[in-house]
Figure (cartoon, protein in one colour):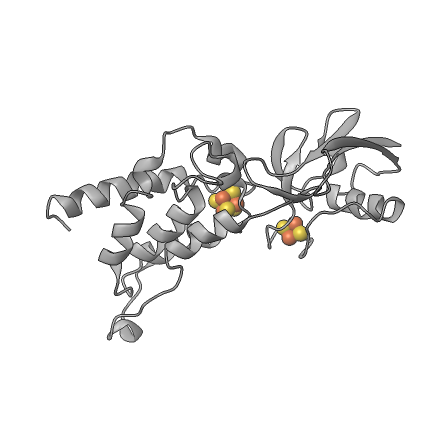
Length: 230
Ligand code: SF4
Ligand code: FES
């Protein structure tokens, strides 16, 4: 038997912690535990979709650490009790479900689509560029880094780690025709200069993406642009 403590919140009522007891195998994931708990208590709410650490929807805080519920095994938690809470810094909609709209809003601002140059179709993508792009594809857009960042979140103008990194991804793409426009966003008032170097995004990322690495690259590119270098 495992003790599980879950953050509960229903709009219009006070938030509280609820304790459950449940049979759990060390090989079970936290998502399996949650699905089993929901059989016990159908009012319990959480997000999940792929069950294979691909969609990012089950991101939450597990025993104080940012984790994906479907990637975290019960046996990896060296405590008697499993403690589950929603991503911080974002409005809780219900229980473990947060409103990710500020994150998506920041993501939309970086224009996450390729605006292809007229000759982009025939452009050769070097291995170097291809390897760089692969690093960006790892990001699940789970929002954990955004939630962990003390500068990003509700009512804050800073775009946050993953949206900045994704903006930089398109700046690095030689096929893209709107690099200057993108630079105005990621290198502008809401962009990379808002990072205070808390490094919280590094610990929060389930795939060790380290989005802060790209903040420094954006700052360098923005400075070069201001000084007239490309
Ligand atoms: S960088 Fe990591 S933590 Fe941030 S959204 Fe992407 S996968 Fe999630
Ligand atoms: S359910 Fe998709 S990442 Fe966990």
